[in-house]
Length: 117
Image 1 (cartoon, rainbow, N blue to C red):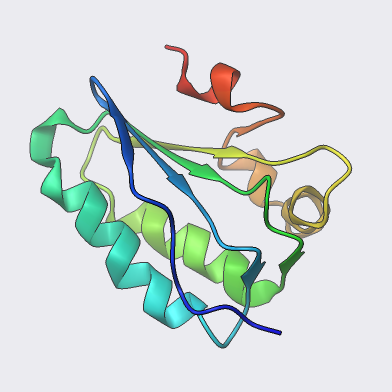
Image 2 (cartoon, rainbow, N blue to C red):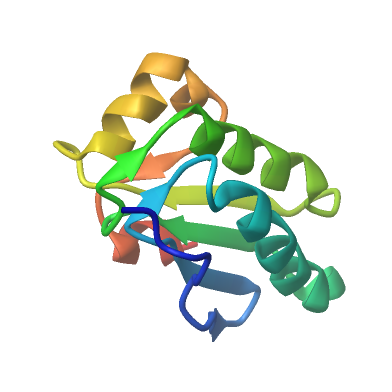
């Protein structure tokens, strides 16, 4: 079952935005997630230093999830960075590894590390 796009409310720290991603990211919701996430990032303007996408609750992600992450990364303002949080044994982590996106976007095992400077 695919859930409608619904990242949780952003949790702001100075220069950082944390968004929890849905349990499933696939062709049914990735296209709708993109404008929601990009608008949250753009709303911070120059104050955004790091966007953290939390994939720890994501139990299914296909190639559309990878495309989503890549599209978000390319839409961030210059100088802003993206970090991902994924359980090491989780599906999202495995998909990130198989596609090679881990080489381009830092992936952390826990939120505290991803949010740290």
